[in-house]
Image (cartoon, rainbow, N blue to C red; front, top):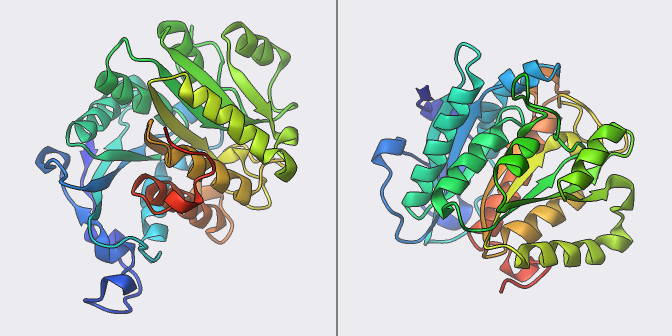
Length: 328
Protein backbone atom coordinates (compact mmCIF):
# COMPACT_ATOMS: atom_id res chain seq x y z
CA UNK A 1 0.00 0.00 0.00
CA UNK A 2 1.29 3.46 -0.90
CA UNK A 3 1.28 6.32 1.59
CA UNK A 4 1.66 9.97 0.60
CA UNK A 5 3.99 12.15 2.66
CA UNK A 6 2.70 15.14 4.58
CA UNK A 7 4.65 18.36 3.99
CA UNK A 8 4.63 18.74 7.78
CA UNK A 9 7.41 16.12 7.96
CA UNK A 10 9.67 18.43 5.98
CA UNK A 11 9.96 21.45 8.23
CA UNK A 12 12.94 23.05 9.91
CA UNK A 13 15.05 26.12 10.39
CA UNK A 14 15.08 28.64 7.53
CA UNK A 15 18.12 30.91 7.27
CA UNK A 16 17.15 32.50 3.95
CA UNK A 17 14.18 32.08 1.63
CA UNK A 18 15.96 32.78 -1.67
CA UNK A 19 19.70 32.25 -1.32
CA UNK A 20 20.32 28.59 -2.20
CA UNK A 21 23.64 28.49 -0.36
CA UNK A 22 21.62 28.92 2.86
CA UNK A 23 19.07 26.22 2.05
CA UNK A 24 18.39 23.09 4.08
CA UNK A 25 16.82 19.82 3.01
CA UNK A 26 13.27 20.95 3.72
CA UNK A 27 13.70 23.83 1.27
CA UNK A 28 15.02 21.56 -1.48
CA UNK A 29 12.92 18.39 -1.35
CA UNK A 30 10.08 17.99 -3.84
CA UNK A 31 7.10 15.83 -2.86
CA UNK A 32 6.03 13.96 -5.99
CA UNK A 33 3.77 10.92 -6.23
CA UNK A 34 5.56 8.03 -7.88
CA UNK A 35 2.99 7.92 -10.70
CA UNK A 36 3.74 11.56 -11.53
CA UNK A 37 7.52 11.29 -11.41
CA UNK A 38 9.09 12.62 -14.62
CA UNK A 39 12.51 11.82 -16.09
CA UNK A 40 15.18 13.96 -14.47
CA UNK A 41 17.21 16.30 -16.70
CA UNK A 42 20.05 16.36 -14.15
CA UNK A 43 21.26 14.32 -11.20
CA UNK A 44 18.44 13.37 -8.84
CA UNK A 45 17.79 11.11 -5.86
CA UNK A 46 14.34 9.92 -4.85
CA UNK A 47 13.43 8.82 -1.34
CA UNK A 48 11.06 5.88 -0.96
CA UNK A 49 10.16 4.67 2.53
CA UNK A 50 9.43 1.06 3.49
CA UNK A 51 7.24 1.05 6.59
CA UNK A 52 7.68 -2.60 7.43
CA UNK A 53 8.95 -4.67 10.34
CA UNK A 54 7.18 -7.95 9.59
CA UNK A 55 10.54 -9.49 8.72
CA UNK A 56 11.93 -8.42 12.09
CA UNK A 57 8.90 -9.92 13.84
CA UNK A 58 9.41 -13.22 12.01
CA UNK A 59 13.09 -13.12 12.98
CA UNK A 60 12.14 -12.63 16.64
CA UNK A 61 13.65 -9.16 16.78
CA UNK A 62 12.57 -6.06 18.66
CA UNK A 63 9.87 -4.08 16.87
CA UNK A 64 9.73 -0.38 16.02
CA UNK A 65 11.67 -0.03 12.74
CA UNK A 66 8.50 0.65 10.73
CA UNK A 67 8.52 4.15 12.24
CA UNK A 68 11.99 4.91 10.89
CA UNK A 69 11.27 6.28 7.39
CA UNK A 70 9.32 9.28 8.64
CA UNK A 71 11.64 9.79 11.61
CA UNK A 72 14.67 9.90 9.31
CA UNK A 73 12.89 12.39 7.06
CA UNK A 74 12.28 14.68 10.01
CA UNK A 75 15.94 14.45 11.01
CA UNK A 76 17.08 15.15 7.45
CA UNK A 77 14.83 18.19 7.12
CA UNK A 78 17.14 20.67 8.88
CA UNK A 79 20.44 19.42 7.50
CA UNK A 80 22.20 21.93 5.21
CA UNK A 81 21.92 21.21 1.50
CA UNK A 82 25.46 21.41 0.10
CA UNK A 83 24.80 21.17 -3.64
CA UNK A 84 24.05 24.00 -6.02
CA UNK A 85 21.71 24.10 -9.02
CA UNK A 86 21.43 20.95 -11.11
CA UNK A 87 20.80 18.41 -8.34
CA UNK A 88 17.36 17.39 -7.16
CA UNK A 89 15.91 15.54 -4.17
CA UNK A 90 12.45 14.00 -4.48
CA UNK A 91 10.26 12.28 -1.89
CA UNK A 92 7.93 9.70 -3.44
CA UNK A 93 6.27 8.54 -0.21
CA UNK A 94 6.13 5.20 1.60
CA UNK A 95 5.31 1.57 0.90
CA UNK A 96 3.39 0.08 3.85
CA UNK A 97 3.26 -3.58 4.82
CA UNK A 98 -0.32 -4.55 5.70
CA UNK A 99 -1.77 -7.67 7.30
CA UNK A 100 1.68 -9.25 7.78
CA UNK A 101 1.99 -9.63 3.98
CA UNK A 102 5.75 -9.17 3.79
CA UNK A 103 6.25 -10.76 0.39
CA UNK A 104 3.57 -8.58 -1.20
CA UNK A 105 5.11 -5.44 0.31
CA UNK A 106 8.57 -6.43 -0.96
CA UNK A 107 7.17 -6.91 -4.46
CA UNK A 108 5.56 -3.48 -4.27
CA UNK A 109 8.82 -1.91 -3.12
CA UNK A 110 10.61 -3.61 -5.99
CA UNK A 111 8.15 -2.14 -8.47
CA UNK A 112 8.60 1.32 -6.94
CA UNK A 113 12.40 1.09 -7.09
CA UNK A 114 12.25 -0.07 -10.72
CA UNK A 115 9.91 2.81 -11.56
CA UNK A 116 12.33 5.32 -10.02
CA UNK A 117 15.19 3.87 -12.07
CA UNK A 118 13.09 4.21 -15.24
CA UNK A 119 13.07 7.99 -14.73
CA UNK A 120 16.90 8.14 -14.52
CA UNK A 121 16.70 8.86 -10.79
CA UNK A 122 18.72 7.20 -7.99
CA UNK A 123 16.58 5.40 -5.38
CA UNK A 124 17.32 6.02 -1.68
CA UNK A 125 15.27 3.54 0.34
CA UNK A 126 14.44 4.30 3.98
CA UNK A 127 13.66 1.07 5.87
CA UNK A 128 12.12 -0.58 7.83
CA UNK A 129 13.62 -3.81 8.96
CA UNK A 130 16.41 -5.26 6.86
CA UNK A 131 13.80 -7.21 4.90
CA UNK A 132 13.74 -3.91 3.01
CA UNK A 133 16.82 -5.16 1.18
CA UNK A 134 14.95 -7.90 -0.67
CA UNK A 135 12.43 -5.46 -2.13
CA UNK A 136 15.32 -3.16 -3.01
CA UNK A 137 17.05 -6.05 -4.78
CA UNK A 138 13.91 -6.97 -6.76
CA UNK A 139 13.78 -3.45 -8.14
CA UNK A 140 17.48 -3.41 -9.03
CA UNK A 141 17.34 -6.79 -10.76
CA UNK A 142 14.27 -5.78 -12.77
CA UNK A 143 16.09 -2.63 -13.85
CA UNK A 144 19.38 -4.23 -14.92
CA UNK A 145 17.98 -7.46 -16.37
CA UNK A 146 18.69 -11.10 -15.55
CA UNK A 147 22.08 -11.41 -17.25
CA UNK A 148 23.92 -8.47 -15.68
CA UNK A 149 26.23 -9.26 -12.78
CA UNK A 150 25.23 -7.60 -9.51
CA UNK A 151 27.45 -6.99 -6.53
CA UNK A 152 25.60 -6.49 -3.25
CA UNK A 153 27.60 -4.62 -0.62
CA UNK A 154 26.19 -4.90 2.89
CA UNK A 155 27.51 -3.00 5.91
CA UNK A 156 26.22 -5.24 8.67
CA UNK A 157 27.07 -7.13 11.85
CA UNK A 158 25.11 -10.16 10.63
CA UNK A 159 25.13 -12.34 7.51
CA UNK A 160 21.32 -12.60 7.18
CA UNK A 161 21.77 -16.02 5.58
CA UNK A 162 19.21 -17.96 7.62
CA UNK A 163 16.98 -20.60 6.08
CA UNK A 164 13.79 -19.38 4.43
CA UNK A 165 12.17 -22.82 4.11
CA UNK A 166 9.43 -21.91 6.59
CA UNK A 167 9.15 -18.24 5.64
CA UNK A 168 11.35 -15.27 4.66
CA UNK A 169 12.33 -12.79 7.35
CA UNK A 170 14.81 -10.01 8.03
CA UNK A 171 17.45 -12.71 8.46
CA UNK A 172 17.05 -14.62 5.18
CA UNK A 173 17.33 -12.14 2.30
CA UNK A 174 20.88 -12.80 1.16
CA UNK A 175 20.39 -16.57 1.17
CA UNK A 176 17.27 -16.07 -0.94
CA UNK A 177 19.19 -13.96 -3.43
CA UNK A 178 22.35 -16.06 -3.65
CA UNK A 179 20.46 -19.34 -4.07
CA UNK A 180 18.03 -17.95 -6.64
CA UNK A 181 20.28 -15.64 -8.65
CA UNK A 182 23.59 -16.96 -9.92
CA UNK A 183 24.56 -13.52 -11.22
CA UNK A 184 24.49 -11.88 -7.79
CA UNK A 185 27.40 -11.88 -5.35
CA UNK A 186 27.75 -10.75 -1.76
CA UNK A 187 30.30 -8.70 0.19
CA UNK A 188 29.52 -7.88 3.84
CA UNK A 189 31.61 -5.60 6.05
CA UNK A 190 31.44 -5.48 9.84
CA UNK A 191 30.62 -9.10 10.66
CA UNK A 192 30.55 -9.85 14.36
CA UNK A 193 32.49 -13.01 15.16
CA UNK A 194 30.13 -13.79 18.07
CA UNK A 195 27.02 -12.32 16.46
CA UNK A 196 26.63 -15.22 14.00
CA UNK A 197 26.49 -18.96 14.58
CA UNK A 198 29.05 -21.29 13.06
CA UNK A 199 26.31 -22.57 10.74
CA UNK A 200 25.93 -19.05 9.31
CA UNK A 201 29.69 -18.80 8.74
CA UNK A 202 29.57 -22.18 7.00
CA UNK A 203 26.65 -21.02 4.86
CA UNK A 204 28.52 -17.85 3.93
CA UNK A 205 31.51 -19.89 2.81
CA UNK A 206 29.36 -22.35 0.87
CA UNK A 207 27.62 -19.49 -0.97
CA UNK A 208 30.88 -17.73 -1.78
CA UNK A 209 30.21 -14.65 0.33
CA UNK A 210 33.15 -12.32 0.94
CA UNK A 211 33.23 -10.85 4.44
CA UNK A 212 35.38 -8.78 6.76
CA UNK A 213 35.18 -9.03 10.53
CA UNK A 214 34.32 -5.96 12.57
CA UNK A 215 37.50 -6.41 14.61
CA UNK A 216 39.63 -6.21 11.45
CA UNK A 217 38.11 -2.90 10.33
CA UNK A 218 40.60 -0.60 11.98
CA UNK A 219 41.74 2.82 10.83
CA UNK A 220 45.11 1.42 9.80
CA UNK A 221 43.47 -1.26 7.63
CA UNK A 222 41.01 1.03 5.82
CA UNK A 223 43.12 1.47 2.69
CA UNK A 224 43.37 -2.30 2.30
CA UNK A 225 39.62 -2.69 2.86
CA UNK A 226 38.83 -0.02 0.28
CA UNK A 227 41.12 -1.80 -2.15
CA UNK A 228 39.18 -5.05 -1.59
CA UNK A 229 35.93 -3.20 -2.10
CA UNK A 230 37.15 -1.70 -5.34
CA UNK A 231 38.28 -5.11 -6.58
CA UNK A 232 34.82 -6.52 -5.81
CA UNK A 233 33.11 -3.62 -7.57
CA UNK A 234 35.23 -3.97 -10.69
CA UNK A 235 34.15 -7.61 -11.09
CA UNK A 236 30.48 -6.63 -11.48
CA UNK A 237 28.35 -4.71 -13.93
CA UNK A 238 26.35 -3.00 -11.17
CA UNK A 239 26.48 -2.47 -7.41
CA UNK A 240 23.80 -1.90 -4.79
CA UNK A 241 24.58 -0.74 -1.25
CA UNK A 242 22.70 -1.56 1.94
CA UNK A 243 23.35 -0.43 5.52
CA UNK A 244 22.00 -2.30 8.54
CA UNK A 245 22.50 0.14 11.40
CA UNK A 246 23.03 -2.64 13.94
CA UNK A 247 26.59 -2.72 12.56
CA UNK A 248 27.27 0.48 14.52
CA UNK A 249 28.64 0.43 18.03
CA UNK A 250 25.70 0.60 20.46
CA UNK A 251 27.26 3.64 22.13
CA UNK A 252 26.50 5.57 18.93
CA UNK A 253 23.38 3.69 17.81
CA UNK A 254 21.33 2.33 20.73
CA UNK A 255 18.07 2.47 18.77
CA UNK A 256 18.36 -0.68 16.66
CA UNK A 257 16.78 -4.13 16.84
CA UNK A 258 20.07 -5.87 17.76
CA UNK A 259 22.63 -3.46 19.31
CA UNK A 260 26.32 -4.29 18.83
CA UNK A 261 28.62 -3.56 21.79
CA UNK A 262 31.66 -4.07 19.55
CA UNK A 263 30.24 -2.40 16.45
CA UNK A 264 31.81 -0.01 13.97
CA UNK A 265 32.25 3.70 14.54
CA UNK A 266 30.16 6.18 12.53
CA UNK A 267 33.36 7.48 10.93
CA UNK A 268 34.19 4.05 9.51
CA UNK A 269 30.67 3.58 8.15
CA UNK A 270 30.73 7.08 6.66
CA UNK A 271 33.98 6.29 4.85
CA UNK A 272 32.49 3.10 3.38
CA UNK A 273 29.31 4.84 2.23
CA UNK A 274 31.23 7.70 0.63
CA UNK A 275 33.53 5.33 -1.21
CA UNK A 276 30.86 2.98 -2.55
CA UNK A 277 28.14 5.53 -3.34
CA UNK A 278 30.57 7.77 -5.24
CA UNK A 279 31.45 4.93 -7.63
CA UNK A 280 29.71 5.16 -10.99
CA UNK A 281 28.66 1.48 -10.89
CA UNK A 282 26.66 1.94 -7.68
CA UNK A 283 22.96 2.26 -8.44
CA UNK A 284 21.16 2.73 -5.12
CA UNK A 285 21.26 2.71 -1.33
CA UNK A 286 19.07 1.61 1.54
CA UNK A 287 19.30 2.16 5.30
CA UNK A 288 17.62 -0.33 7.62
CA UNK A 289 16.96 -1.25 11.25
CA UNK A 290 16.84 2.24 12.73
CA UNK A 291 14.32 1.80 15.54
CA UNK A 292 12.88 5.07 16.94
CA UNK A 293 10.92 3.15 19.57
CA UNK A 294 14.18 2.00 21.18
CA UNK A 295 16.22 5.14 20.60
CA UNK A 296 17.72 7.42 23.25
CA UNK A 297 17.09 11.12 22.64
CA UNK A 298 16.84 10.50 18.89
CA UNK A 299 20.56 9.67 18.63
CA UNK A 300 20.21 6.75 16.24
CA UNK A 301 17.64 8.51 14.07
CA UNK A 302 19.92 11.53 13.76
CA UNK A 303 22.91 9.35 12.93
CA UNK A 304 20.81 7.48 10.37
CA UNK A 305 19.88 10.79 8.75
CA UNK A 306 23.52 11.90 8.62
CA UNK A 307 24.59 8.62 7.00
CA UNK A 308 21.73 8.87 4.50
CA UNK A 309 22.91 12.39 3.72
CA UNK A 310 26.39 11.02 3.03
CA UNK A 311 24.93 8.61 0.47
CA UNK A 312 22.83 11.32 -1.21
CA UNK A 313 25.75 13.75 -1.41
CA UNK A 314 28.00 11.03 -2.86
CA UNK A 315 25.46 10.00 -5.50
CA UNK A 316 24.83 13.59 -6.51
CA UNK A 317 28.50 14.49 -6.70
CA UNK A 318 29.06 16.22 -3.39
CA UNK A 319 32.02 14.03 -2.42
CA UNK A 320 33.88 13.62 -5.70
CA UNK A 321 37.02 15.13 -4.20
CA UNK A 322 36.66 12.92 -1.12
CA UNK A 323 36.12 9.58 -2.88
CA UNK A 324 38.48 6.98 -1.49
CA UNK A 325 39.00 5.18 -4.76
CA UNK A 326 38.66 6.24 -8.35
CA UNK A 327 35.56 5.51 -10.39
CA UNK A 328 36.34 3.78 -13.62
